[in-house]
Image 1: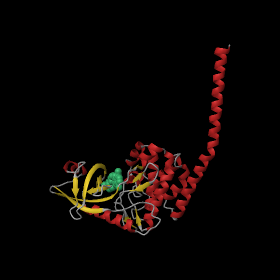
Image 2: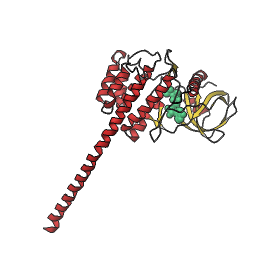
Image 3: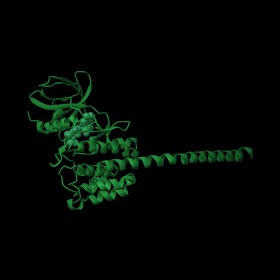
Image 4: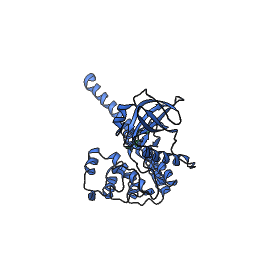
Length: 315
Ligand SMILES: Nc1ncnc2c1ncn2[C@@H]1O[C@H](COP(=O)(O)OP(=O)(O)OP(=O)(O)O)[C@@H](O)[C@H]1O
């Protein structure tokens, strides 16, 4: 049977409650809801034999899946004690369903929401805090000689308490090779901002483009994607970093990211932390004045009510 798309996949087998057994390792999983799908496959919530929830990625193409598995394996085995994210590969196997063999792997399940959705629901002021963790995770991947490659809001899941996790390691590429997988909007080549050769600055660029994307209206983004290639320049992204009020505090860091001037990742992180610190201090020092305003408002309200009482009852 030929399966050519994720929707074919749904029609064939992967309904909630289906039990799948790995052909080589023999582990049995109960399939739950579909968590999402992309170009490389579909991800399901599944329960493993110990009753634990895991995420199961079922691919259309065994070669793509293998390259992702290799990337996760290399990154999760790295002895980086300061690794700021959780990465693990639980099982890699094939499942035989009817006439079809499906390659799959299982990994930790993250209940977080995609970055843009999280910001919409929790508040835009979370951008700095979550962004800082993303930068830490990218830096950790770079320390191991890889770029993440396919950075986009959907590949950043954020939990309710603001902790975040990169997912989808299909774009992870060793330094010096052509980036394996990317999404146009966040791609340095798309903006004529540099090559697609994997180096740390490729991810920094994507991060700055992502920052603009999460704050700019969707319609404007679509209009820009339709522009002629020669009109798309990283200068436009720079300009948006100065215009968008939420990005203003970070504009000089983002500008360095767009122009390839982030030579010291430690400095990027410490500069970002300083902006967060300043921001927090400003909010803290703003509080007493808010309290003062509240008191003044209450006093004015009392005066107004007293005046009304005098006019209508005392007169
Ligand atoms: N570990 C996980 N925990 C929870 N949800 C996940 C997990 N991994 C993936 N997902 C969900 O499944 C969706 C698709 O997964 P993923 O991005 O890995 O697929 P893809 O085919 O590589 O996508 P793309 O075409 O965007 O590269 C994600 O956007 C996310 O919503």
